[in-house]
Length: 238
Image (cartoon, rainbow, N blue to C red; front, side):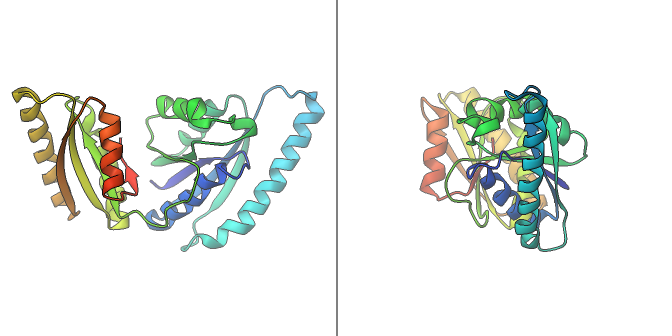
């Protein structure tokens, strides 16, 4: 996680992504690059695009001035302005670097539409192999102390373990390994127990604190969120 890409449309909500990126950058010693994407065609033609570009530069310069001092160890805070589809240009920019994470708000305005998670954020998650960290509107956590990591019976459920461990190690966070299922059969229980044991050993190897739990319910999303709320978690790894 040497580079963090943050989509920005200058709305108040989209800046939550930048604030969260600052917190992660300070723990992981990462550089941050903000990305603004112009539409290829402006309602006002070429002049409109030029004015939008100038305004974006002015806004970015203000953000760099305001937030650079919040980075503790001299990491770089930069920006780039691109043209095209928001999700595709954000993913392309992330793939221009190695060891990149995308951090974005799920709500924005203007170029990112009113409900970002319903369109661009979901497309970003689907279009990249890089980790994506999203934050909803509201307050930004100042630290990450508890991470909920739900584990199901799918073969790829453990793919998130290394990146979750890296975040947990950086923040000194406790990982809650939660085996989730909609039914409890011998086959399901055996597989979940095996996965949980493997993850336990992995986290022990990195000296990461963890707890385990098992949840069964009709809606895995709901029971995971309820568990996260019950323990006052800061992050859910999916």
